[in-house]
Amino acid sequence: MIINADDLGYEPEVTRGIVESMRGGVVSSTTMIVNGPHSAAAAALAQGLAVGLHLNLHRWSKLSAKGEWDDASAGKLDAAAAEREVHAQLERFEKLMKRKPTHLDVHRHLHRHPAVLEGLARAAVAHRLPVRSIDKAMRTALRKLRAVTNDHFIGEADGPAYWTLEQLEKSLEQLPKSGVIELMCHPGYAPRLLESRYSTQRETELQTFTNPSARAWLERLELVPVSWQRAFS
Image 1 (spheres, rainbow, N blue to C red):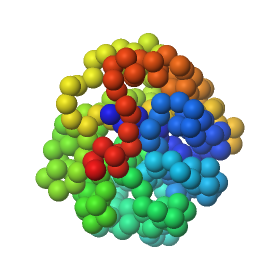
Image 2: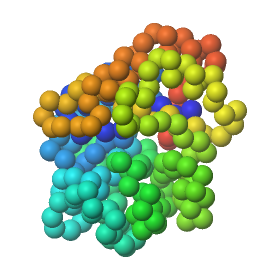
Image 3: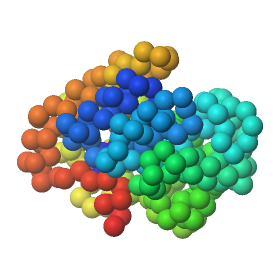
């Protein structure tokens, strides 16, 4: 089982909370945005942690072309353009972290677009990196493209805070009995430098994943959260 915190590098307060959730809580993995104004600072704070690439096609600078990403950008990409951007963001990741990422996932799940998914898979196969899948259809498509992916996915970031203590306990009790499972989460402190639809909800998730009860439940169920790299080694 992997407990992955999305959005490292999104905003300093978010990054601070993610690092706390990993160094003092039960979160075992994170993914970093590399094309934003706070990416370099996040990389410095995350040294020694399991960090993957949080491919960002939603905002800030494009790394493989001129201009910036916006809400509609991902839907206009073809597979070749998507692949070029993945390679460019992977290159930036390695410059910031001085190592390869553990895996790939996508901000706002924009690999729901078929062309983005194809380009992402091609780059992942070339770099020998696993990719997050969020449902059966995406899992099947990735495997047809020869990309390695998880078997199960749990998590949400829309509306009220998803990972309350109650939700975590319920999910841990009902986990599938086999396969690689990813729990996606968004711990952090409420952003101060930008607006986010998932804001104070992050603080609820931070409290959940640093609560001693979370660790106690994992120990009782004999569950040890691992990194993506460890899950597929």
